Amino acid sequence: MRKLILVAASIAALTFVGPASAQSPIVLKFSHVVASDTPKGKAADKFKELAEKYTNGKVKVEVYPNSTLYKDKEELEALQLGAVQMLAPSNSKFGPIGIKEFEVFDLPYILPDLKSLRKVTDGPLGAQLLKKLDAKGMTGLAYWDNGFKQMSANKKLVAPSDYKGLKFRIQSSKVLEAQFRALGSIPQVMAFSDVYQALQTGVVDGQENTWSNIYTQKMHEVQKYATVTNHGYIGYVVVVNKKFWDGLPGDVRDELSKAMKEATEFGNSQSAKENDDALAEIKKAGKTEIVTLTPEQDEAMRKAMLPVYKDVASRVGQPLIDEFLKETGRSPMN
Ligand code: LMR
Image (tube, rainbow, N blue to C red; front, side):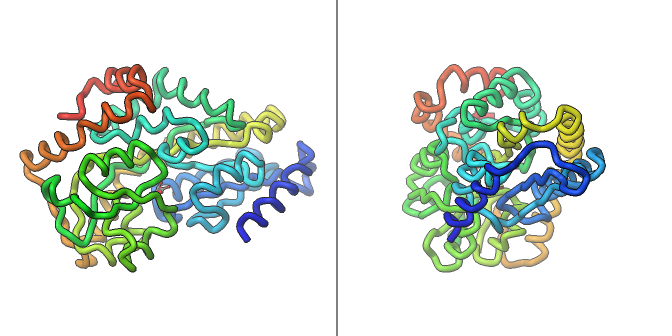
């Protein structure tokens, strides 16, 4: 069914005839997989508000949250076909379409804080990575934050040995696969929209995600424990179909760029608070025990995951990993 919708939508996209008259605005479909009440959801809604305001109604932005249009993998296919015009997939999701470099963001403990992240995304390395999207028929417009990932399971996760033999849902990233293998777990790639049910029915034992995603997908209702690990990062690349973008009248593209810049500033200034608020709500709900690690336990987790850097060096690129670490000025061990 989804495939059919995709084909129909792409035929419709092919009939796009460029600049629209006042009666028929240019429609920009923005599909994403998370709830509206998340860092990405709010930034997407802000973009819609500003884009429609700045273009004076010449562009109509339709935001489709919560995988209502497409699941993870289909989203990028749909964008390349022109069935949707804009997405903000996580860095982890670009590997399957052949841009493995974005998986560098998935390396465990590669980002100590959001300040270090900005050095990468706002600097030459961030721009260089966005350029790689051109060859895939898309233009990278911005980096949006979610935040740091936490581990959850029905078993208390403290030491690396606690992860042994457990099945964890992962996004489609080879780095994340290597991360869970380093812990002796069994990683399972699964679309975001399927995670709640998989946890509920025991298809997987655990997962990793940000507090805002855990809370808005109600994962905390079906996981007995969540450990504050901050071991990885989830952020997004806002991408637009290149043909659509290049075909827009220059003034419209400028107005949309302005809207994107402001929506990015808005979203990224709030993401940390949104995750803190979600954690507070999870605690309030009282269904999940929140586990915190001592500095020694944290160090043991870092040590256990360190081999991942070697495991994925040839895939992601050692020079890229080195450059990334140089930009942040930190090591995964501190
Ligand atoms: C996930 O699949 O866990 C995340 O990428 C979802 C999202 O977009 O935050």
